[in-house]
Amino acid sequence: MTAAPTTQESAPTRREWLGLAVLSIGLGLIVLDGTIVGVALPAIIGDLHLDLTDAQWVNSLYAVLLAALLLSTGNLADRWGRKRLFL
Image (cartoon, rainbow, N blue to C red; front, side, top):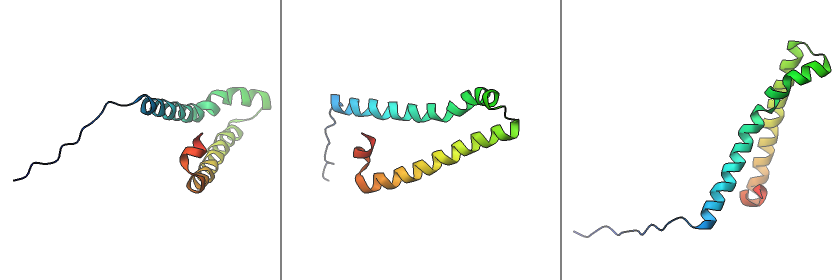
């Protein structure tokens, strides 16, 4: 029998930790972005004198625009590279 080759695992480097931190901040901003309209909705309703139906449209349109931008950004990331687009 032959022994399985051993792989040496090294400790994460400073650059790897920095990459993890940047990606974590980006993910946190995406989560924060999803709550922006919900927090601002009462002020939007008051300022624009909207009823509940119109306020639901505001929330829905924000979600549709976010989805459209995510699709187009994904296409750009495929063309230019994810790292270049993220920076």
